[in-house]
Length: 433
Image (tube, rainbow, N blue to C red):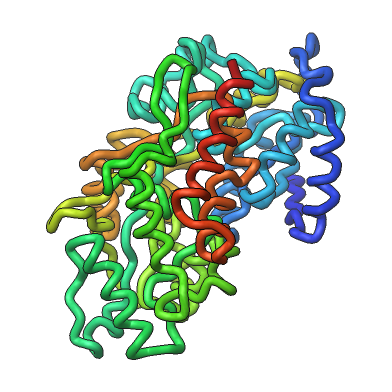
């Protein structure tokens, strides 16, 4: 086996951003007419907070793949999630340097299809025996206009991680409402000023969304590709105000936390620097590997009403094949191996990723009670981002993080920042058609 794993460095981000800014919106991303059965397959996967267990599972898959595909080799690169938009868009524009297979977020599907970067693999997906057991919601995440553009890799939702030792020491009850969550966070910070009460992030979009949804707000409204922003509605503003109230010296200082993304908040919790954090089932391995191992528990993130569950973002990742690949058959085969039932079971054991197959997820739940809060959250109301190609631009442009950061820095109030964000979102929706 010849597996090359190149860890992408954050030091290259400025160059990537500059390159992406100069790149045209489209280039030569037409489908290749070649289908080579040997040579090197290039794969881009996302880098996790604690990436080693994921690498071990992938290395096992690659080793078996290379045994059964004579003359084929696989080169895997792990790229930061935060810069995926620039990296992948640039790859669509430059097929010669592009990978053959990519991991991508389910929020990116519509945008990547519009960009012409992903291969339509409907025929192969329908002929794949395991595909019939894929969760319908997961299949929907790889489907655009009835065509399939990848294989579901894992499904993910977020819940509330909390320090059992800190709660016991301070005599705290697990919060049952959003208001209790906020007061509990500030109580922890008051009693233990060396801790963030609840680690939050100004760049943690998917950790903030449940606050908006729990208060009756929406990100956008519409259907069939035609959307309008709703982030400036009264209900959405109430949720924004609730979330941004957690930035300050009485919980998570804005000077530090305004720049936090989701990985930063999980890292803070795992390293023992926070009493609570909003983390995914996919954060389990990182927390287990940290200083709080054996001293934490997880419950669904509470909603506004007592005993309710805040609607969670129905996240997850997919594996896709680039339209420009000259090794389509090999790429599809590897995609199926990476997204297979066996691999998803191994990734659950290694990383806590929830499988996209109902039967594999049931087996996982039977083995590990840890996932019960996440299963409960999935069973409650979940939400998704607007199914529009515009979302990729909105996300990459950091529209919502900018809104949160302007509020917590004092540069704008909730009403003004939400109105600005709504204007930017509507411009993106309009340009998407």
